[in-house]
Amino acid sequence: MVQVEAFRQLVAARAGGVCEYCRLVELATGVTFHIEHVVPQVLGGQTVMSNLALSCPGCNLAKADKTSGKDQSGQAQSLFNPREYEPWLLGWHLHFILDRESGTILPRTPVGEATILTLGVNSDRRVFARRLQIRAGLIG
Image (cartoon, rainbow, N blue to C red; front, side):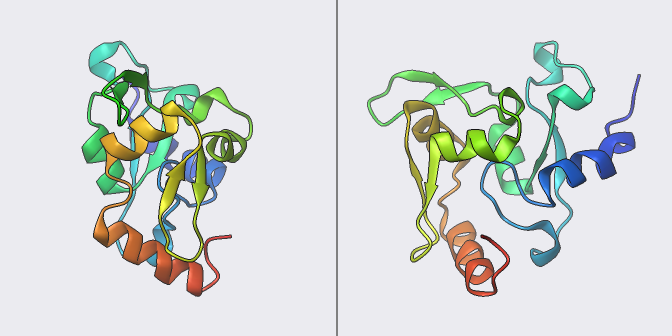
């Protein structure tokens, strides 16, 4: 079985050192980000580059083995999959907007909405951290 840590440098470089869900910058958080399986292993997801994403602990722990969540109307939606886009940031911008004043991430699509709600990307702590990172010029 391939160990996920063998992919850490490649996954982190591809993501630019940023959580592929909430955009926090790893080096500025003081914690080690997780290498997460977009399709969880318990659902048959493999440990291969095309199924791995860089995720802050908050997003990864909230996502756990989920691949879908509910939007505000209660409809089930797939969660954002950064591996569906090349580069991943293009896909991010198709589903989300970063409000640079507040540090809040807003949805553009039902997928974005379900992802924001399921992963808690706008928790007080993550919004605060994003605002600090925006002000420091780390999040563009």
